[in-house]
Amino acid sequence: MKVAVTGTNGQLGTDLCRALHNFDIIPFTHADIEIVDMASVREAMLKHKPAIIINTAAYVRVDDCEDEKEKAFRVNALGARNVAVVAQELGARLVHLSTDYVFGGEVEPRTAPYTEFDTPIPLSIYGKSKLAGENLVRHFCLRHFIVRSSGLFGVAGSSGKGGNFIETMLRLARERDELKVVNDQVFSPTYTRDLARKIAQLITTEYYGIFHITSKGACSWYEFTTETLKLAGLKTPVVPITSDQYPQKARRPHYSVLDNYHLRLLGMDDMRPWQESLRDYLVARGHIT
Figure 1 (cartoon, one colour):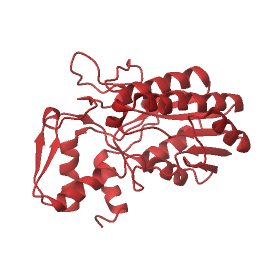
Figure 2 (cartoon, rainbow, N blue to C red):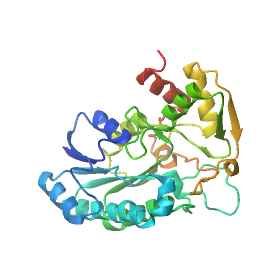
Figure 3 (cartoon, rainbow, N blue to C red):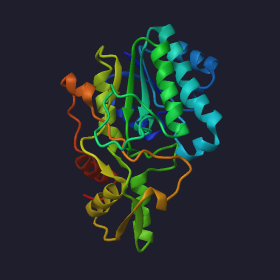
Figure 4 (cartoon, rainbow, N blue to C red):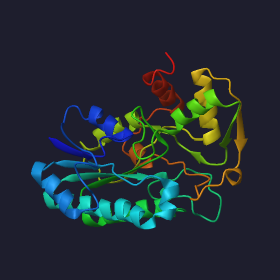
């Protein structure tokens, strides 16, 4: 069975290619396909006629999206639409990757994880553009899996961000006397290798719809950093700060923990705790043995 994957040079795309080793993979990088161009998408997909399309391509620079609103919506919304339209024309199944940042805009503070049946209220342009993409996928492609995840980290790093949070913290911990990290943004960090394996399982089903797929448990960026340094054997002090002390252009949710509710209803939620995945990542990167 042919599976086309966009964004194969990214951290999730790289792990998807490994997880899909039993399939006939058609890898697309940005050099191979331009998702904002319908003709480019149609030409690439019609050439190979995949049975499944997994679209990981996105504009993920959250703060830059605030300044480049049109680019954010062109890639994350219209690009998603283009892939969905062509998937429908081919009769293909479509996996569309989305984000926990479609949530967080409620007036009342949130303390319970979001299920797939909660109403998204995004705070940022990035979140709004990703939600628009979700809605267009749902409208244009009948057989879709919309997969929301959170705080992705993978061995390949993020091509759109120039690395990932873990590697940045490890580098800074070796360069500085202390680190200051936000402690009032709570999420579920997720290893792309685990996410890719679950997507590879999901596409063999006909359980179409929205899925939250994250590691078990939740933490703040401060807690994530302290656990990373502890596992790596680094003693650099980590100081918790508030989001107000680390201003960014885009507003982040204070709480965006996702509940893998749909998977659990289907008896498919076997995602690992984030601490276990983090340890495996550090081993894979050679930071620990």
